[in-house]
Length: 123
Length: 123
Image (cartoon, rainbow over all chains, first blue to last red; front, side):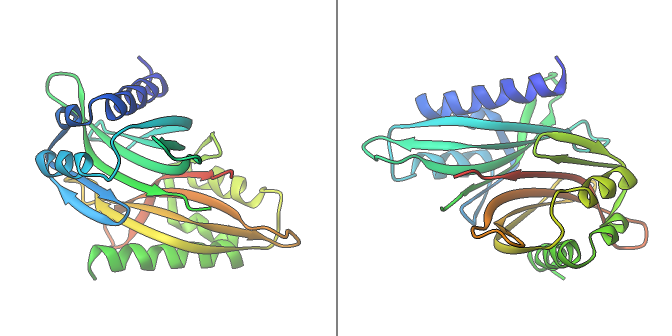
């Protein structure tokens, strides 16, 4: 699978999981993983899933606008840069967001999220 | 200098240079560097500076809203994620943008930009 297709497949999987079963996202992170969510820094898959599960909304729907990717260097990693909007249940207007992921290969031939930075784009 | 201060210093330097002497940005990239600008992929410092110099505006002013950073792994790199707005000369409204940089250390103790992804955030 070429890098662009891989990035798109990851992004679709990630947000589908986020919108249907947020706790399941823990499998995508490891102990070294970092999330910066609206400026708050969290490390480790358990703490990251706790943070995501504790966000003050239950139902949401991500709509993806753009996905860009680049190889991140000799380690075989991949940078994925996403823009889109987030519709919260009961809210009239969707929130625009940008998010970047740094995916690193696992020995099993898959990828995990080493870096994750999320920001809402306030209008 | 701690990573957050370093990231902020880089971001201030980058956009000050962009707004005053775009051609000078070439020193921040190397031959392996990649830029994805609104979906267009460009590789190498010369091609990147050509692209930035050819953008259809002369004067601009970046205003930075947020800067987030994380270490990118064992290679000593740093991921910098920026949101802000871009005021073009003669335009009434500023354009919102998000941009990420992957900075890698040089043998001289400085950093260069290995990865650069830029997107406007359309309202």
